[in-house]
Image (cartoon, rainbow, N blue to C red):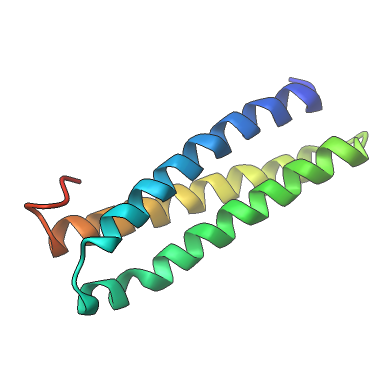
Amino acid sequence: MDVQDFCKSMEAEMTMWKAKLYDVMRKVDNLGSAEKEKVLQNIEDLHIYLQEMSDRVESLKTECPSDWSPVKQDIDQGTVDLRGKYEETMDYIGKAAPVSVPG
C-alpha cells in the first residue's frame, strides 16, 4: 500500500471514529452528573487519540517520507488505543445507564 492510499484509508477510518465519538457524547449527555464526571477523562482521551492520528496522517500527506513505516506504526497503535478507550467508555456508559443507553 502506498502512502496516499494509506492516508485516504485512514481519513475514512477517522471519519468513522468521529461519528462514534459524537454518538458517545450524545450518550454521555444523558448520564447523571456523577456518571458524567467518571467518564469525562475517557472522552478527553478519545479526542486526544483522534487528534494525534489526524496530525500524523496530515504530516504523511505533506511530507511524503521515503520510509513512512514508523509513522504507520504510530497511527496503527493510535487506532488500537482509540478502540480500547472507546470500548472501555462504552462499557462504563452501558453499566451507568443500561436502559437508556443500549451499548
